[in-house]
Length: 428
View (tube, rainbow, N blue to C red):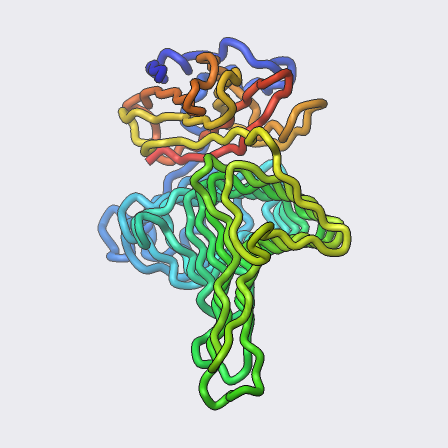
């Protein structure tokens, strides 16, 4: 495992593969405070140093690029189209209502981290939206119990969240329509139907993708919802319900699934009737000219021999050599050690990329897009025989709270360049 101080690595820009199109601002060191940004403190308890006691008035006062720090408490839902950063700075920062990011303009960034929300929507955003890094609400994860809806948005990145659909039986926990989205290190459970239904209700999809969306799912677990059990009053006249698909994709959409070999994509469990049960849902339900490329995950569901259902021109295919993955390990706290962990084919040559500006850029050749404008590139060597390569660095002790940065990796193996999913962090 390689280790170096980030003060040394990021003291100035040394080179970039695309240096000719890096803007003048990238001539500054990577880890510098964002210019002309105000800091707003929100504290429900009304502490003397707080600016506001709730999030809606704080957002109303905020300007693009501002940082909103939130202490523990229970806050109202909000809707915003501003490019701000919202960071929970204590445990148990809860938004009881709906969080809606709506009509964020191109060239702007919205990022939220360490904040729990009952319900999330990202609608019609041309700018970049990042939702990441939950805290210990459920087994160490944050949970949006009523799910996530993403519609008409160009660049949404979600990491370290749990989505559990426990209302509206038959609905998907996460829905993506006409959008470009990536999920990293997430857990998604489809809607389960209510117990003791008098009519059969099938479980909902975990992840529902539609309308020419482009989605990347990395290091994540997805489960379909469980079908309803039937009460005795239904007798022999009712057919038992089925489990929902883990992933349902349609509308000529594309999905790339990558994993480290430890993740499961599994159909939902069947419902029970008086003397029978339904079918388990498929892992992948691929329809209407959609395509799924998958590797490094365990698929489980019905049919048991191949838990994939392909309909109306949908195609799913397994990659023989698993696509690489990347994730940050550790907390982005000044003075702490942070690790970029890559899994991939042994012998693959790794490059770690760090930057402050997100992008989606499909370069000629290779697999996957560039997802950031790199300021720093580190090339520590090849992936070892165990399929893992770590790169560790120390965050400077003087980093400003709420600073945004992101990472990605490329792996060159047998002449092909593979680009991993990215991950966004806000310094705590």
